[in-house]
Length: 206
Image 1 (cartoon, helix red, strand yellow):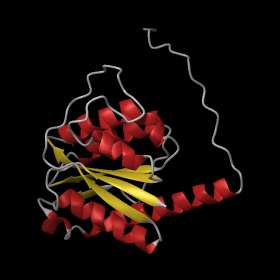
Image 2 (cartoon, rainbow, N blue to C red):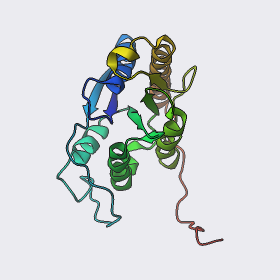
Image 3 (cartoon, rainbow, N blue to C red):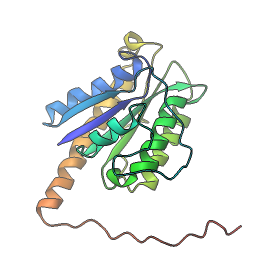
């Protein structure tokens, strides 16, 4: 089993990376592999709703969206990590995930996920609320912890001092591992995925 993590920060080894690495340590102890996918600092397009998505993902291939989608197809669970800018996730990760989920939402169905937010001070709860909405619309079980999934610090070294934040990361990792193992046991017993109704669209009602 493998968990794919997304580092939504331009800083490859900053606070977000520190939080994700703490999760990774526990996953490895639980016998689960992980990969941290670095978005980096290159430009990321917004989704323009062009409707030209394909099996490969988004029609635009000049950033890392489709590379992430390809890896997501092989992953069993996900962690999406974001720094907090102005009490909100980074605009980069939202543009990235809008296109990932708009083009390839079925890739994520029934796979557990957790969002992680890091900040110097405030805005983490609001950021988690935004990221968790991707899971709800994609039939993804949400992995919780013993507190909201947040770590505080101005940089990676500061984050290492947030004992409760790191504890929360370790607990979300244990919960992710438990959920993945439960799903695997269910598949071995022949438990089928639930049926999904589609087609009803009443968004025009005011």
